[in-house]
Amino acid sequence: MQEGDLRARFRQGDPDAVREVYRSHGRLVYAVAFKVLGNRGLAEEATQQTFVKAWRAAQTFDERRELGPWLAAIARRVAIDVYRREAIRTTDPLESVAPGDPALVSTPPSVEATYDVWEVREAVAQLPPEEQEIVRLQHLDGFTHAQIAERLGIAVGTVKSRSFRAHKRLAAMLGHLRE
Amino acid sequence: MSTSDNDRISYLSGEPVGSLTPRERAELDELRTLLETPAAWEEPDDGLEERVVSAIAEEARRKRDAPSAIAEEARRERDAPSSPPASPAPQPRRRLWDRLSFPRPALVLGGFATAAAAVIVAIVIATSSSSPAPLRFAMVVTGTPLAPAAHGSATLTKMSSGWEIQLSATGLPHMANGRYYQAWLKNSAGILVPVGTFNDAEHVILWSGAPVTQFRSFSVTEQLANGNPASSGRRVLVGTAHPVH
Image (tube, rainbow over all chains, first blue to last red; front, side, top):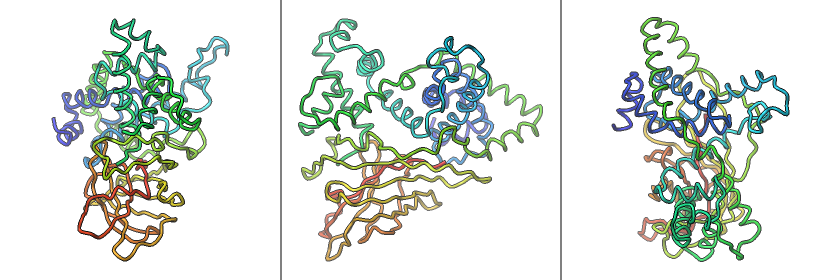
């Protein structure tokens, strides 16, 4: 479905279009929400609310615009509202609250930080699966190349070459493009 | 790709590299930190898609049953200003990737290579409007090693006939005698689109027929009126456009 047609059908509330918009932008919306909230359940709640709000406002959505930035802006607002609600609601003793609980965080991430995670998420999603896995194991899980090789049952050299290619792609996508 | 870029990639990918300066390491560590952000990797529950579709179906049912209530809520959502910042207004900060030098192989022209020291700061301006505002982007532009003193800003506004780019920059000498400046937009695939030529950058209005939403990398090159319209590769000013909401 071409994006222009998709936007028009989303505006009409077409269930297939809603599903398609979620499939194309849902993970990015979730990434923004998770960046603000740091909690899976709250981030999923905020993601759901984001799409509902987007649908409600879809009739006035300018079809010349891209859905992504519009959804990201709604997601951040929704997530901050959830964040504030949770920060006010929590009355547990401080020592019993998990370190990442929104109630402990003094301020939500900046607009720039939420756009950062959106761009990183988009770049990571464009990596081939085998390279994405290497980057995830390395950065998110903190494994060394040797540990990754053992975990995946491949040679260390293969890990290193995949890692190099992946980071070269990421740098190209996230770096300021040069001629 | 130059050796120094290979070293940067190697450092990013976890290899020990001794040739980088502390500043280069700090910049690359910033990118590493972003890659370590759980939000960049977390996946929502598989059932969230159905919950979203169901929630919207319920909204559609409510709309059929109570059109005025839903319409009012939609108007509030449309007209709502951006949430007031829970933190102080975003302070300018160096955008990591705008300081990295990672040339795409397809874009190396004429052997031009730069060890950019440009400092790019993104400014996001919160706006509210009771009517749909034209799509707007903004950016800070900074000089390259060819013009280290150059700096300025630009706004990019969607109009009916394309994107108007208002650039204000200082630190670039006036060009004449067959020499001029050319502005470009580029997308993530490296496709360059020319957006105008000028002699002085203090206040110039440029125009793009390509969407800024996709072509967000901005640059200005020094050019010679010799019949070759291609970019000289001699970049003097760079910036990245960010949406303004």
